[in-house]
Every structure is written in structure tokens, then in C-alpha cells.
Length: 507
Image 1 (tube, rainbow, N blue to C red):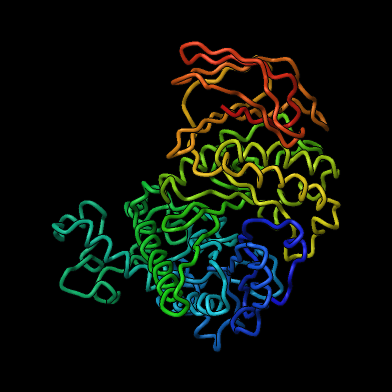
Image 2 (cartoon, rainbow, N blue to C red):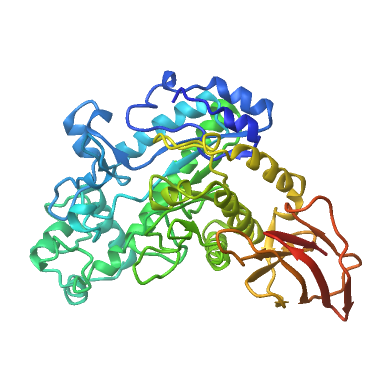
């Protein structure tokens, strides 16, 4: 917590999404943090985001073993779920968001960071207490503690207000000795419905989400770091409710004590945030792949960057989903999460290919309305950007985006078709909300352990009206260029003399 990264002052970004963080007992006290650095951030106009784990807990985090057990998630037999897959030297579990004492625990360190002067808070892995971990093969056998199944009773009673005993029996196979009742408090699990007992009687206690369980769909399948807008299952409904409570209370505390608004974010796609920060890691849910590893956000082949791959569809998916979940005004940031295979692959790339990664896939993020967070440092001892020889590149490269920030803010992806005569070039047409200004973005994916420039190709677009001027801008060459173009009745055609990694066509 006392660490301070001088690379931040060199790069001079708009914000850091995780400048400090709460982890286990480190962050329980104000003295654990180096809040003095916030003033140095502000002197350079950099927004300072605090953060912390919202789900990983250890025995030493709490005063007694009984409190630790009460804070922990449980399986369908009522036992705490271990998370030894993390490989930590001490036993780890997931904290139970449905426990009001655990939510207060999260707020306790959030308030410390607010008191210290942070500009915002990033809550990491809000809903990660439902996987079952390696013990259950990540089959969803987790989250079946008393607090959660009491809320499950409330959810079912609210959703089916007219159900009679006969309905509960016929629809869900409940029995007379374990059935939902309106005349008994939902949390009285001895006299009212007990979902754990139901699972045991049905033989689903080791696999609660099994399709043969009539209540599995009502319970829902939690997707880590995602809160989809259309998901109205029990777990989504109540996690969304408790997440909003955390956000509202954090914002209210900052306003009451500091008289200021603060930014809120989380890892993934979430509602009620000021921006979404999406960690890129294997086994993500953003693309259906045969091996279920999800979208390949750091594409590598035999240790070398696969620059021929495009991430346009994945970036657009994130932007579209975030707009549905958090609203179109909430920006979306992507960062290489750690420690995982994607970060390892990135760190092991040759130096020039690390630069190419940002010049291709960082640029492609910008070209599709996504903001890439450039990687400076992690907390597990990996080489920093300075150690890797990347800092001079980052400082030079980001200068282009700072200078031309107006192209990248408040954008929507336009649906007009774009035709490019050169192969392996992705194109995006961005329309700025409020102004209607258009910019056409080209990314070159002709790549084999290095970029292969393309030259002398045409770009055509069908527009609502013809532009008065067209100019080319790029981080790959100094200053704007004026390409030859023609336009009649909105049909634009122009010639690009050379495309290295990335070019913007300003209309």
C-alpha cells in the first residue's frame, strides 16, 4: 500500500484505474496507504482511483474463526467453499455479498480510501462467490449459505405472489415437509422452505445447477465479472440490488464527508458505474470458443504476436453490452488482467512485438470506442514497463491520443458500410454524439512478426452527406495528410497512400 509508481508521472495518463488496493489485512487501516501521492497525481491532472478485492478473503482478515466462517460462501451442504486454486500460502475463500456484515466490511475499507482523498473506487470481482472453485470443478456449487437461501425465498415469493401450496408442488416439486409459506418469515429456514434440504433430497447437492433441478433456472448461473441487463434470475436480481447498495452508500459517504462526487468502477461489465473496466483474461465469456477460453485478447502464436487477428468484434461486443448494462455514456476500459496466461504471453513477447500489440490492438480498441489501459506494473513482481524498455514508446505513443482526444470520446459506432480494397484491414466509422462529427478508422492486420505496410488502396463509404475536407492522421507519421478524394450524393471514395498500423480519416 505504501508503494508509489514513478512511471505514472512519466506517462501522465488521464487516470489510473487501480492506483492503490485493499488486499487481505493490507488496507484495513489508513496507515496502510500512501495517500500523500494523491496530491502529486492531482498536480499533474491525473485521476487517482483506489480499489480492493470485493470477494477474496483469508482467516487473518477477521478477528475470529467464527466471523471468518460467517463471512464465507458455502456449498449446498452448508460447508465453506475453499479456493485453493489461487495457490496462496494461506487458505482463501470468497466473501458472501448476501451477508450484510460482509457488505459493511467492504464499505469499511472503501470509507478509509475515501477519507484519504481518492477520486474513485474500483471494486474487483464483485460476484465471484458462486463458481464452486476447483473443489467442485467450477460447476456453481457455491453461495448456498443461510443469508442467500433466505433471500431466495423472498425472491420466489415476490415473483409468484399468487402461488398456492399446490402450485409450489406441481411447478417445482416441493414437498409438504419443505415448502414455501407466506405465513412464516422467509429467513426461518427451519419452518419455511430450505433450499439446501431441497437440493439434498433431489440429489443435486453436489451439482445444484444441474438441468434436472426444477429450481436451477430460478436460481440462475452467475457469470464472474458480468451483470447482464437481461438476467432477471434470483442471483442476478439480488447481486444487482446489493451492488447498488454498495455504490449508493459509497457515493453518499463521499458526499457527506468530503462534499464531492467520486467515480465508481468494477472489474467487468456492471451497472451503476461511471465507467466499466474490463479485465482481459482466459476463460472470459465474451466469445464462444471450442475450448471455452473465451475471446483471445492477447493473441499469440508460438510465442509471437498474432497481429493478423482482429479484435474488432470482441471490442464491439464489450461496448454494446456495456451500453445495455451501464448506459451508452459510461466509457469502457480494457486492461490485461493478471496473473494469467494473457499477461504472461504479453510479457514474453519480443520488445518490438510488445509495441506492436499496442499499435494494433490498443489502436483497434480506440477505433471501436474502447479505451485501452497501458500496462505499467503489477503487484506480483513482474517486470515493469521501464524494465521492459517500453516507457519511451508509451510516452511517445500516448501523446497522439492525448492530442486528438476529441476523436475518441462520446462516440457511437456508425452502421454505414465501409469498403476497403486492401486485405486484412478492419475499418470503423465513429460518430460523435451531440456533434455528428465522423471519423473513419483503419487498422492494418497484415502481420508476420512485424507489421507489413499497405499502400495505394481505396476506401469507400456511404454517408448521409459529403464532407468538405478529408485528412489523414496517425500515430505512425507526423502531421495530417490530405488524400485525394471524391464524393457525390454521399458516396465517398478516397485513396490511402500508406497504412502502417493505424490511420484515422477525419471527415
